[in-house]
Length: 260
Length: 273
Length: 72
Image (tube, rainbow over all chains, first blue to last red; front, side, top):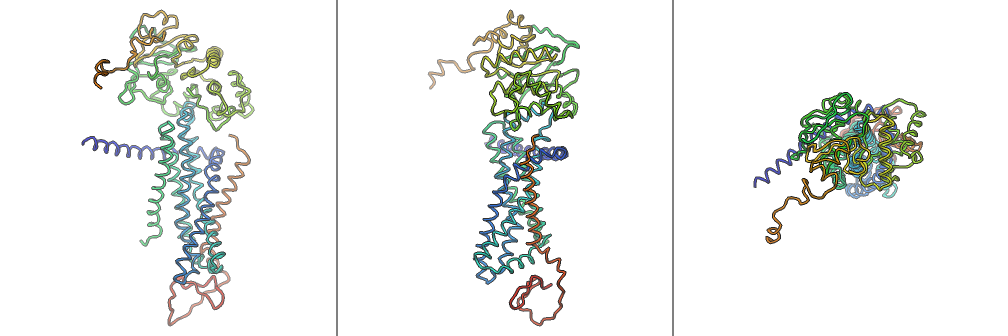
């Protein structure tokens, strides 16, 4: 009976320990950013593997999301005779929510898990240890560039998702469903505010970028250095990132778009 | 403690006194005294799991002892601040069991890594230095290969070239002969001895390959159950009257380290099922 | 380390694409364009009955849409 309580306690301690470790780790990583900027080739190589290689996934997903949104939006709006406002529906949904959030989830699944696996594997094969013994700080040389690349890539990817998505919606709405070209764009332009919507969307994607990149590199750095450990860590990256993104999205949305 | 002929003095590079270290409940070191003389090859041997790798990590400052002092070249390692520790590490080379080469870099870049990170030398000079180090280990022709294309023995030799890139004062070898075929083993053995003498290094080899290691070592420490159970030159240890040491050096299956894992009485165990 | 030209090129393209997307969002999608209404003017009119019009509703005239006029 008491064993169960003891287990709970141990789990609780473990949770707080991990939280503490991850925060200290974040501070160390941030401290390593200046040294990354001094050696841009590290950052550029990571931008390639984290950002550029996610581009196709994000663009295609954005396209389909935009197209489906136009279809669904039209079906509902047409009952109220408001199908001319389709542009508004598509744009606001994507720029405010779907762009940042879906991009973050896809990013966590593709780039985040790859980062975790790569770092975890380096830990398991003693490469991080070897670097330490050669008096090179692995947090500065391996972790910080990857973290920074993730943070920088996210808003760019989210913007691409949004832009492609809106054009996808345009293609379906105006091209296939016969919504008026002019009103599609003009209504959108009057309803989508640069500061309220676009800017807040970018802020959201930056926040998500920091959180997802942080989770991904930390899980990799903290793994049990066995193949089983690495596989469990990559799963954790995706799961925790999903929770964090969706949870933060609620908080940010309430802050940004709520009436207060 | 049995025969410990310590050789303290300015000729000692590494001084370990009364080292105690536990991982969780397991006591790994329980009062260990070691002296590593400069310019010589010293072997640290013992059965698997006695924490020999842990000892190297303690010397390198990756782990902190629970008690005791570890002095390398006069500096107390656990007390060092980060920048001083990093400065000391630049003068230490370490050869990991797996080589620990960076998998995303070519052989050339791997050996060049410490030079590029810690010096401002121009690329032309770095190229020359890398080629010289590779030549010393006999793998100059492999410089464009990727680590994934190397055999285990080759990877270790590249790692050795990398370890001597900054001309360190000492090199630590973590189980260098494990899992090697006779030819690679022979090559590595010769290299370790040659480099030690030619470059004036101090070498610490952690291994349980008795024959090979004894062949090239000047001094041996045998560690078992967290303590030093024997030390001396290879000759001394061959003539030892310690049961521990004899069992280890001669590879006897039973002795002070028992063959059978602790278990209840055999007959009772069989009959109780 | 080894910085291939391809890597740099691709990363450059990526960043340009991202920034361009941000521009599209700013220019074509948001109301930034309606800030620069140099060729427009403000009309003040009194209505007795505004039907279902609300603030910021787009107003159209007869056969074509005006991208400009909003009720403010």
